[in-house]
Length: 307
Image (cartoon, rainbow, N blue to C red; front, side):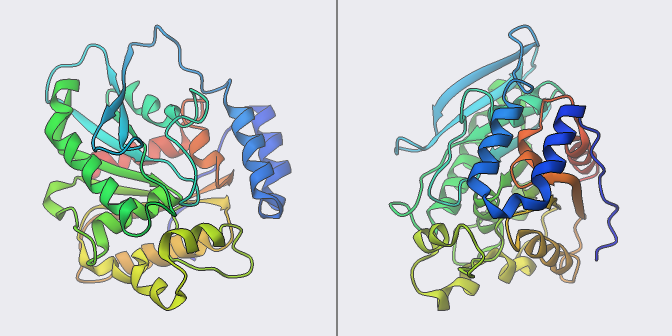
């Protein structure tokens, strides 16, 4: 157990009912339950046209069709004044996109923009065509694009936080910690936020995304530990927040907690926090942003203020 206090969600009543129904059986049919959660949250996270947030869509940070990003920013921005959160979606390494349906996962970047933080929503190349370490490379290239361009949207190049969910969290972590990758320097990054991230590659029998792991990390399991971010936590002193849901894809909560514990050890001295979102599952932990519940968002903004 960690010494972090659990974050107790306060969702709307219909949301609470859905989360409590799905939660204990989440892993029995992850695809079905993921679709139910996205369908439930889509109308709740819909952003209004008059909420003061502007969106610059499908900006290229690389030459591949999927190397694009969206910038959500306060329309009253002034150059070089605001913190920046760069978000990479999940999808088991082989699927997913920055906007599933025009709302999810736009809602994450939009939630930050409504609070005066520039939100960047990143799409990246997928396995098997883009196998390890392509995801980390895309995280790095997106970060560099943001460094070079975010001032025009009000963001500060010296206050960029990288945030990734699931496979996206793995790519963010690899871009920071993996010595086999071209890494983002500690001093260039304000902090990292790893949400329900795959921090260890495994193809265990109860891993519902084992094929995605093979597609990205390769068919040789003897390479997995060396390619797993959890093996290299000591290589970066970046400020770090690790978040997991109560109901996770098998083992991701355990890997997240182990990553956090290793991140607390020397030579790391940077701010390191862990949160566990009660009642939430692997998808709702990010799908709930902009729905009226700010539980995880508040923990993130507190972390950003302290980093």
